[in-house]
Image 1 (tube, rainbow, N blue to C red):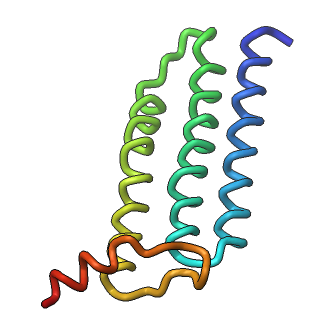
Image 2 (cartoon, helix red, strand yellow):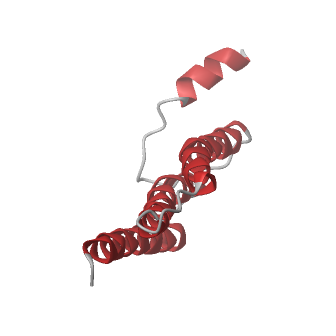
Length: 115
């Protein structure tokens, strides 16, 4: 195995680990807010490291794929932002938080704004 294949394998293992961790988080966490946090953060990191592995694997053959780099950039920007927007929308529509596990710091602010 060459050095590039070893580095690529390490990135693939890291990506698979974070993607698997994200899937477990989506299944096991108690409410929509925690699940979106797992899906937005861990899966983004997992998919980005898998795409970096793809990019690194093809660099020695002289192929520099700008599409992979753009996909990494767009995914890194849009996935956490979309998770934030889904969480914000769920909170504004009254989706309940998990009982006895989190503190609602925004409750007072939203109640004052409705008066």
